[in-house]
Image (cartoon, rainbow, N blue to C red):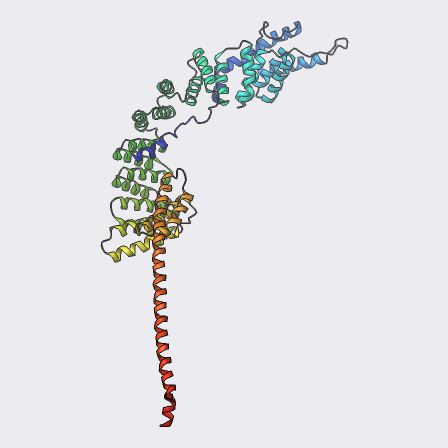
Length: 531
């Protein structure tokens, strides 16, 4: 059925995670993240730079300060140590740089005190001094991730993992990095590992769902979403995402169940209700569809006029003009004072379509005239008016009435054959050509068909076939006209020759009589003079 192809294309546009999700900013405020980051003040001697005895004594001192979470005090103490190391008071002691480990610790303190730029510089300095510094790579990656610089975070994250880092945070962030780089399969693997290590972390579950969506693995994504729904049943996002998966799987009524749940919970929205209406329309259930469409209008603070008009169009395709009329009536009641001129025009056009669907062609024409009063340049309204007059001409009983309707139809269609909207121009040229073909005026119809072909978008095969049929008819018509014209020329020539022959005969007779008079010695005028 035509309706299905018209509506299903809408149902495939519902993927909410069309863009890569970012790591939730709130996650960086969680106790787990703080524990991971603050915990990196310690040292791992087997895989990280060594410290000398003085630095070891400082570390012991800093440990007590950090345990009390006195981060600014720790930062001041460490900076003083760095300065003292570089410029010692004892002139006999040579100045030197501190180890990469202390520079890394300073970076952590900068980060903890909200000085991200200084922290980044410190981590980079630590890595210059010790390129294999695992935690410096890890923390720099975390810093970049928190600043939404995931592409910069990726190489440091991978390096840290290559050096042995393998906690759920690393795998989770790697999953986001892979998604950002359009590597869904790698992202799925990373998120699965993160989820395996820490199944309670919601971000990794959401990340895994997104990776599955990008892979178009609708079935697994829907199952994964169910876990998220069970954990938070009043969050509408996953209900809608799961519904989208069901639609992609062809299980549209399962999707409808999700949207109905949202409706019952009172956490639905206009888009969800319109989608529910589309599903019911696709199932040829106009009453259920109407209910969903009406609910969408009623809950909206600002109604999507164009969407409501499309919904009315779907109901008309279901041959449900009463339901469509009810929807338009509700739309008018809720938006009448805020409608723009174009929106009023569009509503009149839809109302005209409803009237036409109910067989009220004259009412349909009047509604289109109202639309043209508001927007005289509306090509769509003018086109529809021409089409309605064409149908009135076909239904007219009296020939005079039919002729009047045909004149109106051709006049309106002629006004929009060059409309700025190619779709309107295409239809107008084709409709006018069709009328001329019906009246057997094939020659005049042909250029209109050619223009329609030029304006046609998509496949042109059927209209090209139509053109070839009309071309053959036009050729026969032209040949017939030429034969008729030839006969007329021959007849005119024959009549002219006949007239010339008769004239010659009259002249010969007159000349002969004149000659006889001369022989007698008198012309008629001479005889008159003698008398």
